[in-house]
View 1 (tube, helix red, strand yellow):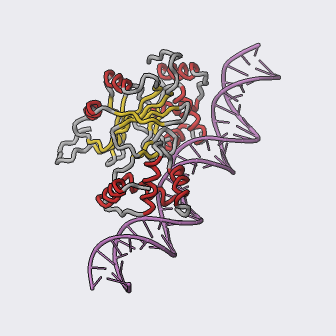
View 2 (cartoon, helix red, strand yellow):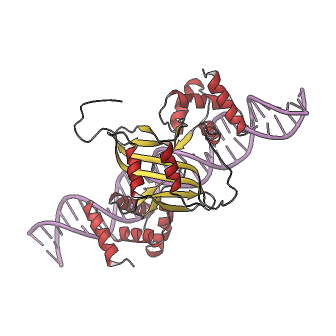
View 3 (cartoon, helix red, strand yellow):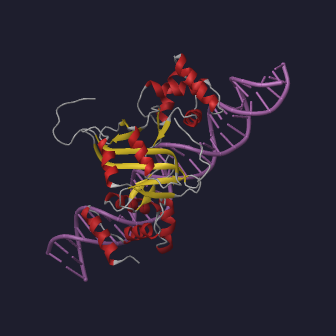
Length: 148
Length: 148
DNA sequence: AACATTATTGGAATAGTTCCAATTCTCACT
DNA sequence: AGTGAGAATTGGAACTATTCCAATAATGTT
């Protein structure tokens, strides 16, 4: 079940963006919050169907778009992979572990965010910044030195 | 025509990765170098066809994969957009201008690259780092000046 | 020249996402 | 509570991007 607080946040955020709070959107949001991984639309669809078997994939896309639009979730994408969705609203990067397939959130310190913005020419306005790593997490000793 | 130097680099890089230098791969590489934008596979296909009308889209994908594999080009991707290809081998970020649709390269200073790596836990090994911005370049205030 | 390996081809198949028209729901206003 | 306008949902078709496949062609090696 969604807590009062979360529910309020959801409704609030949606209406702030001129969108309605609907049962479908609530369940989609709930499902993304419940398991803190980075599901694809298809995975969200599967999880939502457990509670709401009649929901359609098109509606899941619609709900995800709505949640992105009102700023409650973010889209994450890796090369030639389907879009994934992430409810972590703190500034963070993503590490895509190619060995396990998992995606890990990596916090970005505020000063680094500022530094990132600073590399842009002054007339560029960034609405969003995306930092992602690809590699593997479990290679403790045998790391081949690799310089360019 | 491809210059000796470029051709040598291409052949060298390919063979280093256990791949062959073929006419198709040469033309694909040449086309990507010629216009320094960030074409999709489909766009590369269209440009290559001018010189090599019989090439197939599957081959373009194959060639692009080969060039990525040997490190001569990089894949760039934005949310729900087809993969794009970039021959800039310097460390750089991408700015996706949503007003014009253009993608601009933004250099990343060496110390910033180091800083980025430093936010990863010590047992994470990054094979690649991807930094991208989304926004618009034309400043929000009235800006009659027009630079490129 | 013959062979093994690798590349190319066209087309079919798949995956991810969007679109559409019909229906249902919700909210604001009586 | 009833009604109408606008928004959301639905299923399925359409579309786009990419991969797969089996047959053919090209290449480098002996």
